[in-house]
Image (cartoon, rainbow, N blue to C red; front, top):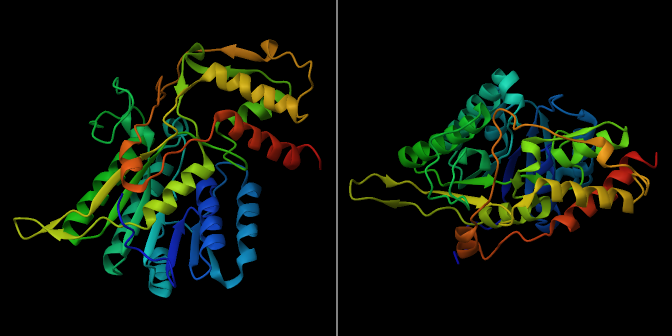
Length: 353
């Protein structure tokens, strides 16, 4: 295992995308468990999905008083990013701000270039200018494209993205590597695999299916149900991020006298892909258990198998061996446990008002 070389005591951490699903959960964990640490969150709170969810996440973080600062702006706004770095002088930056969603990138490409490319460039530039000790950023399992070899390893070639979203995430890895090489900035990219859990993104399958079933609508299951996803529970994602944050790749010189890039990439996934039809069955059972749906709900009448959609892949499956080796951690929350937590949150949030 690697030794931690970042001490959170009296540190300032910037979390971009702080109103998002992962960002808000990460900020909460840091503020709760590290009382000497401050978090500066930035998020432009787009209407890609229900903004009320985002505002509620931020509201919960304000309970930590002046240890949490929130800036409502976009990382694509260079002046805003510059102001945050100059004002708060962060030692650690976690970039989770991004326009998410594979299918949305097909119809709204501009949003992905603005946030995922220009925004990330602004973050990198400020990390360079302000001497950040460690940049951690969200990549995605989508960079593996339609690779046939599974499980996906960080040693695999990832040169054939099948969506613009995937291409922007691959570009983030390349940009971070260049800045690590040129400017000796320690950076770590994290390829997340199908993150889910309470208060998640409404555009994700488990949330979207639930909304449709409650309304009596039909859910569409892609590739005729022959899809597998490495569903990874939000608490496991956050645990992985917190551990990785505390070890910045080591700075050292190469034979050419230039920095050997202090750069790393890890998968964070459950290492256990689930068939989409099995996933839907467990979700239905948990929704019935908590009373979101009646016991006699006719699931077959509300389910339709359809073809694969553009930008989709049939399987995602994370090889987490490097994460286990370096940080002694492997996500392991069973899918039923995670979907049960989601169902219990959903019934509190939407069914008892």
